[in-house]
Length: 253
Image (cartoon, rainbow, N blue to C red; front, side, top):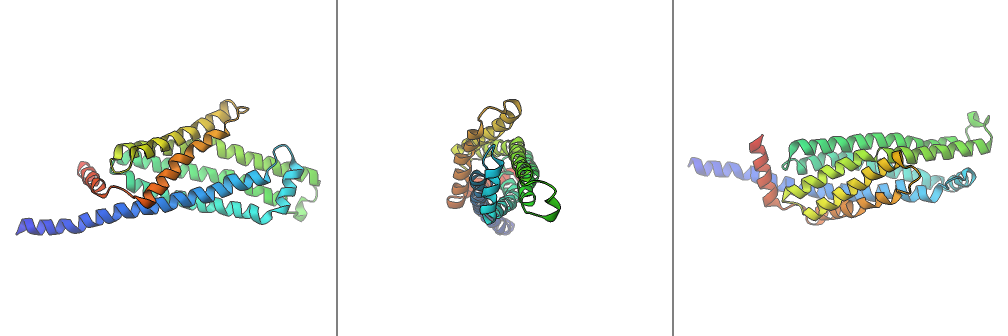
């Protein structure tokens, strides 16, 4: 009788664990893909269309001709930031059964990266204020305003690049946990770690060799990030293995 009652008591818990594993995976997949699309639009596509390196006048002309596009790109960053904050929690829960301490550390690095990148975006948005034509800016000549706006956009690029190390470490830790999980494919973890190394390498290249064309290192995140997002959204996790790992983790703690 007691054994039957205990078995019945375990069923809701097992069912909850199975639902939670699927739910975390689907949420993480949606957030990953939203973050990629919004971030790619706001931080890569639009800046590449508007910013002309070394030409303040052309950059200002592009801005005035595409004010709405500029503001949409900043909105894209806001969407990405919200998704990244949500991912910090969801990925922690999803990967905590492997190692709770490393999953928490990855969440911390991800959150710090998101917060610090907000400073970079402040320089990006500042260009719209500098070129906005406010009365208090009329003491500056148009050429001066154009130069200061381009400088602000340059600082945006450098500030964002210098702090990619936080995102990179988070990716390396999460990739390692995925490789060790057993309920997510190892190749996705390897690709994610490779993308994290690309972010970290880009960071140190800007510091130690700023003239070196290291922008291509950022592309290393695409295979890992996209494959993880699609896998979580379409396939999810191996529920029995996730449930077993969760039970083992709870027993250890």
